[in-house]
Structures are given as structure tokens and as C-alpha cells.
Amino acid sequence: MLMVSIEVASAATSASASQHNESMTMPIAKKSAEKSAVKIRIIIAGTALTATLENTQAARNFVTLLPLDLTLADYNGTEKIADLPAKLSHKDAPEGYTPKVGDIAYFAPWGNLALFYHGFDYSRGLIRLGQIEGSVEALMGDSDIKVRIELAQNGDDEE
Image (tube, rainbow, N blue to C red):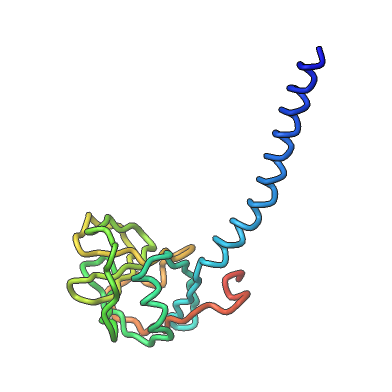
């Protein structure tokens, strides 16, 4: 009888310690993930789009170029594109991917930025940099648009 109560007490202590450890590490992990998420603003004629960048070498290279003032040209009725002032790293990047609405990408073969307002087929050499949050209506249309891309300040992404 004594042996059974020791095992039960030991299991309860172990479960309690496990729950305690989880409650201690979860907020830290969440804060760490939030801290590593880089937010940017894409400003188009007074409209600000917020986007979150990936935690990749290409996205980190992109951040070093900010702020950027670009003229985006329409490409294929699918995306807005502009040449970047410097090449981004594609080290450890997948060979390509299938972009969807709101994706921010880098097309390594041409060295240009692409903001997708329609989805598209798998594209070799395309590297996802991040995702625009919300509507991408400001990107639509076949005309060129002037944009400013900058790091979001604290509170900018809570509009």
C-alpha cells in the first residue's frame, strides 16, 4: 500500500512539474516568435498596407534596404514588380514556390520585388519574403504605382 501511494505521489509531482515548465516556457517562446516577426508598411497614395516578413536570410537582406521608394509596374495582371537596388541572398531558399494573393516575393533571376494581387503558378527562382495582411486592392490595376516601403513603428500594425 505504501508503495502505491509513493508512485501516485511521484506521478502527480511529475505532472505538476511538467505543467509548471510548460507554463514557464510558453510565454517566452511566444514572445520570442513575436519579437522575431518583422512588420513593414507599404504606403500607396496615402493607403498603408501592413505586412509580416518571414524569418529568412532573403527577408533579412530586404529589411537592410528599407526604407525604399519604388515605382511598381504591373506584370502579367498578377503582380506588381520593381527592381531592387541590391541582390538578396537566396542561400538556403527553396528552388521556388507557388505564390498566393498578398505574398511579397523576390524573383532571384531578375533581382526584383514582386507583390502578388492574384495567385500564380509554381515559379522556379521565386522566394517568399512575407505576406500582406488584409486587402491588396490598392495593388490592383494595370497602371504603375509609386510606393514607399518602410519598417513599421511600434503600434503601426494595430490600425
